[in-house]
Image (cartoon, rainbow, N blue to C red):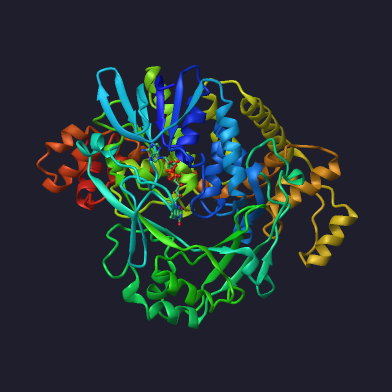
Length: 617
Ligand SMILES: Cc1cc2nc3c(=O)[nH]c(=O)nc-3n(C[C@H](O)[C@H](O)[C@H](O)COP(=O)(O)OP(=O)(O)OC[C@H]3O[C@@H](n4cnc5c(N)ncnc54)[C@H](O)[C@@H]3O)c2cc1C
């Protein structure tokens, strides 16, 4: 078939595109997903892992919203870990190593069986806008029309790969670049150039794992999808391994500085500050001679390993030389050399909060193309774009997640209000409400948003049960007396916690500062013979334990909210001569709707904020 007609067409089957397709096809619309032939859907060109600090939160939010990524991750998970376990629930996150082939196979299986969704194998070479929507032409001669379009071309747009002096056009190794898609956007928006990089893939049989520290899967780490159980992992679990660079590694890199495309001027794109290459680290931290290298399996039947921490675009012979200095990698053979990729990104201040372009009606963009970095960030935006394409067609107000309730909300607001001068990735410090935006209370935080979609699915039934149980458990914790059993007394003695009190409530027990709230509540519920959904127990335990902090934070937030949610008329501001010309230009570009958005615009001066805050404008 060569001609197709859709309500919503998604271009690009990466993490953003697959999530957008999954979300949009939950409604009664005709949805298409076109992606380059030969490149698996939802493939992982970089680290074969999902989640991590700030990102695990996004994956759980997607689960609460009914998304795809949590299901794929659980299915393909070969090592589950809890990061920052000792640092407290605000920064605790789940990270899952995935079998990248199984992940992509499952994505294909789910999406190809999705009612209302058609998968089209084709390389898009041209997009034209007409009165009724969009016409898309492919290299293979296919013509697709659609009322709305979601563009998620990842690192492919005018992509160029670099390994030492070698430069090849492409979106990632052994893949074509994408061209022609930017003509429509570049007529209305500035296009920027970003870069990212990846380490060499190493042949497993040439690695000496006995010189490294094994890191086994943690069976306490709960799955991302609510219905999956840690005791029933779907794949065999594997170890990852930890080794380190040393002064010899860094000397080898430092002496080859001039041969590095990021230092000799060959690469112009800006790279992610928070995922530096090994050459970046060698020069940024001259006094440090050791950096972690996590050697991670790429899959159960894949004999290549991903050495996380040594992303590089140095010439292959330099990569071979510095690998020989790392314990366990002395004999390692490179299967695919490390490389950097430069690609075009759109300026996200030209997007609305729905991720629709401000001047090109019906066109949405999401993922790496929006200047973000990471699978989870891409999937989070894909969900928002997918739902908002549906809402546009149904003439509903945009679907928006409040930044005080969600990391996806934080990311989308950051993207549309401030210009990007480097790739954007999520981490917990980006959220003003990180003690509230925890992984453990995600279903509670996101339930109202899912409900607002007016759908009925397995997640909706689960959320109803979750909220009921949560209410019951909060009540129980506040009213139940605690009985100091001999086992508790012995535990207190062993831990040297002092004398255990007899007449306190469960709530008071949980709040005792030296007790882990989740373990304590779990133990007591077992003793009482009561069963609750595990996520409800963690949510209630932490919510009760940190109640005081949360209340204080909420009070501050409410005070701030009175100011930040105050609506402003950007058109008035843009004509106000008390505001500098430069600030007015930025205001016209971003078109902020409230004070919060105004305050996030790069380059808005404190004097402007003070002036707007103290005048009703
Ligand atoms: C070399 C490399 C290194 C990376 N390093 C990191 C890192 O260190 N940290 C990190 O967080 N992330 C890294 N990433 C980024 C990570 O891969 C992305 O964040 C993530 O894949 C983005 O998802 P996406 O859906 O936006 O795009 P992608 O996963 O890139 O998917 C884009 C999809 O669009 C399709 N497509 C493109 N053009 C067309 C067209 N014209 N017609 C049809 N289909 C098209 C492609 O086939 C592909 O399926 C790296 C990526 C690469 C390639």
